[in-house]
Length: 275
Image (cartoon, rainbow, N blue to C red; front, side):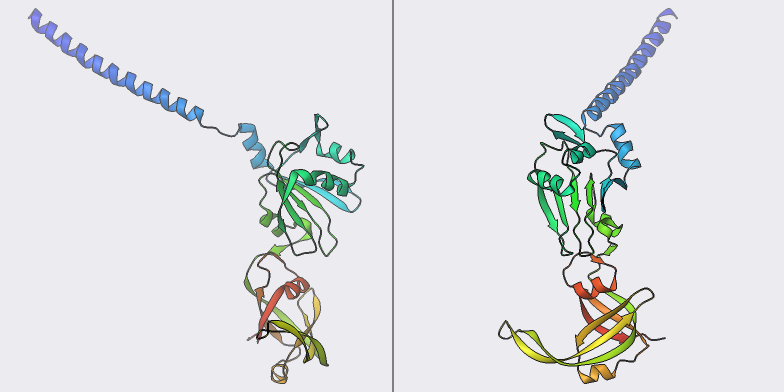
């Protein structure tokens, strides 16, 4: 009877030892996994909170008619004359002259994109001696006279322009339509103008019949000159609404205004809007 009890105890001990062994192995695996995860670089929690909370563009300072904006930044610090100073102090050290500021920063930046809107340029950091991080800079110079400047971190410039950067409300469709009312048609007679000849691949002077079309939507009115034949003109009816078909000429963002659309896009055709 005594030997039987001993056998039972030894069997229980072996079972307990196996269980403890498995638990110990699982704990070791968990600790190793946690250690490896800890080695993976992650953003500081405060950085993540700052990015999530401030993923917007805010007015930073205004100088005369120009505005400096920050995107995804609470403050922008620069290395200047062996010390760290704020962007405001940096601008002040350049007599609050934004042109002087951009001239000084030019050696640390490289042009990423130049827009065909009058001269707007998108820069990115080329030399981090003045910035300790990657910064995108938009220096506005539009035909409308907007000369604001944007400094941003993790900036999506396409979305920035769509949301009004540089005074724009852009869209990026390659093919699109707009509905306008044809309010007037005026015969301008024949004019001589340069016309590209695809056969000779040269421009040549040619007389063409021009018409002035006055078109409007709810908010805007625009007069455009077009070369048209008699058949096309006869098909147009004053006061009627037409669907205008466009192609994006430059393949870039277009300001959603009639003048910008007609200046930068190719008008493919006009079709009477059916009721």
